[in-house]
Image 1 (cartoon, one colour):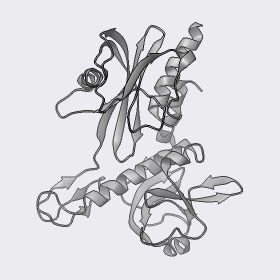
Image 2 (image 1 turned 45 degrees about the vertical axis):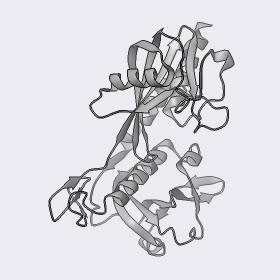
Image 3 (image 1 turned 30 degrees about the vertical axis):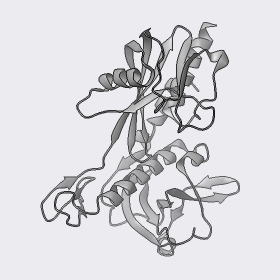
Image 4 (image 1 turned 90 degrees about the horizontal axis):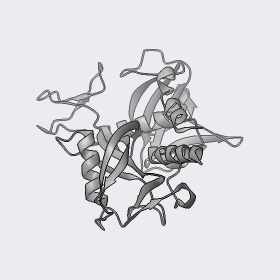
Length: 288
């Protein structure tokens, strides 16, 4: 599958899912539940396949659910998010897996909805009280927001935008290693947007700070929701212009130019960093 096809596939959720803020009176016999236990999704395994649970009201009542909320409708099925009290144990008949572990085990659509659910759970847990007056907040029914009944402050789910950039020089790609990565793994440059910056300014600043070079011909590539806990990754490609690699030894411990024949270990296919690298590989495989 090409990188363009991957991006199109990620947008298929638009055709299958409609977000809503309040559930209808009748949600049908079964609903789909994205339930998290200690930040891992509860799933059921049946004959070697993994499934997000479809629960009726009796099955729902058997689970110690907290912080329940409505997500919307997916393929005519109503979807909810919730947590299991972390002081309890994993319910019988379920196992819990992190979102990264679930890649390839459930569909991309369901993995994206699970990311939406855990993002909203994080938002809910960090906005229980008004940041201005300290009063308990309430969910609004007409939009995805919380409102303080005391002072009227409205709080929306937060996104932390970050840029991620593939830099190429002829047939070479710049890859860098962070101390936080798995052993020997390299990836493309990334960093969060600072207040007051445009995305293009962030691209130039992050590259200058982390590897000390200049780039040009910055092009938008695509984006990916990254719910760890609430990021939006915005990807670009750029071409090398000038300068020598100079690393800061804090965010980056090594960086170098690589051809497709000598690539180091790189991120898995779940992340947009890998989509960028795969795009570069496809591009230069066609040249050979």
